[in-house]
Amino acid sequence: MKKVAIIGGGITGLSAAYSIQRAINNGNIDIDYILLEKSSRVGGKILTERTKDGFVIEGGPDSFISTKPWIFELAKKLGCEDKLICSNDDLKKTQILVKGRFRELPDGIMLVVPTRIMPFITTNLFSWSGKLRMAMDLFIPKKKELSDETLSSFIRRRFGKQCLDRLADPLVAGVYSSDPEQMSLQATFPILLEMEQKYGSLTRGMIATMRARRKAPALVSNQGGGNARLVAHSNSQASSKRTLHMSFRGGMQDLIDEVYSVLDKNKIFINAAVLKVDKVLKNNGEPIYCLHMADGKVIQADAVIICALSNDAAAMVEDIDKQLADTLKEIPLVSSATVSLVYRKKDVKHDFKGFGFLVPLGEGRKIKACTWSSSKWSGRVPGDEYVLIRVFLGGARTQELAFLSDEDMEMIVKSELKSLMGIDVEPVSMWIFRWPSAMPQYTMGHLDRVKRIEERIATHPGMFLAGASYRGVGIPDCINSGTKAAEAVLKYLSGSA
Image 1 (cartoon, rainbow, N blue to C red):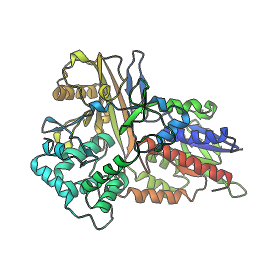
Image 2 (tube, helix red, strand yellow):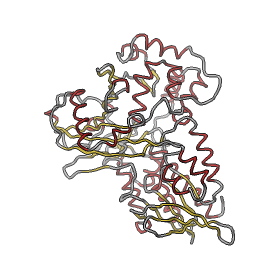
Image 3 (cartoon, rainbow, N blue to C red):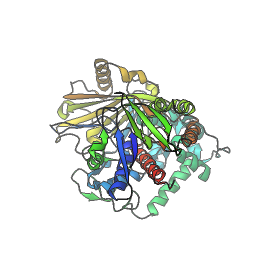
Image 4 (cartoon, one colour):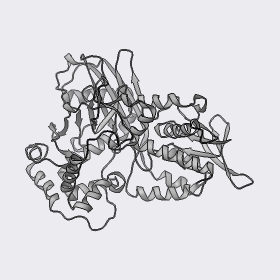
């Protein structure tokens, strides 16, 4: 019986294992697998703490983007669609700090494109000169060459510097932990480039896209696989509605728990770090991959899926292919941290009717974003007595803040919340999560690097790479990446590749 080794127990590796497990259960293959995770738990950056008194605290991502179908497909297969929840969009309001004052993000902003006239005209987020410059997008011709450019270059070219500073920059820094001055447009927001080429103007393109969606049938089952039953709130009331950001009733950990529950536990090993991967050839020329473990053991497999981040993957394959390892090392990774705090609602005078706020770099603040989790999601706090706040630090331009001591990080966060929100009481509880070198950065030349990586990995039959470092950092992208890698492994081992 041939064996597959899956390195990495985040959502990518778990998705790969699940696809192989399903094929085994269906009797389609005679293949074994093992999953090796270097830490003491599976789930990777998806980590939810659920306290005995009813708090749901996200250490990593608190949601996923609903425009990509793969998480819905997985939830349908697992039978856990009833655990999906929408964000509380009746409270949907995001504020941006500009010159020390909170200014509301106007309705109708899609990505960075204004699509509604009156909210755009009346907003105080932009000056009149800034609004006029953004409106010039309707008249600026499209770029003739299809060469890549940074996100910041693109936004400045189409909408001007004020849009970059007050909107695009805080959005990508707060959500993606990235620096728009370094981000590859083709690798991160290709839809913007496609709209420019098709419509000449992003504003016209976004409005046309929205009109087409309104004319389309109601969004229910087909996007995301099958008759997916979605729920609007934690009371499991069935609804066909989807919000842009969605989550799970018990936090994103629900997804990990559901996948883990259907896997063969005898095939999953935690505290199992792979130091390097060697390759030897059998008499018939087929490769055997030898995984050298931190405890000194060597595990052999006929195929291997490396779901680790690119820097860890580079260390593993250096002895096999130094050129591949060197290219993997070219993908930058940055560090970030989140701090979640619980306060008694009666002690905090701030209005929590919204999802939180973003902080542009030019404001000179230590924090880059703040989510009001108890407003954004139902069921994150017990009853109506508490508020839950999540603060973001670190990222591409201030990585050093992710490595502060607990005491220093706590002091900074409390100071910032006091200054910005007037919170001068002690929190009931607090949680700190650090993610060192955990966020891949799709900088200029990223797609060329990925192409070179894929060309090199193709010279090693039976070895595959998957995960957030390559073609999508979001949870749905990781699920898709792991699933595709599993399908490729099954074809390879069955001789149909």
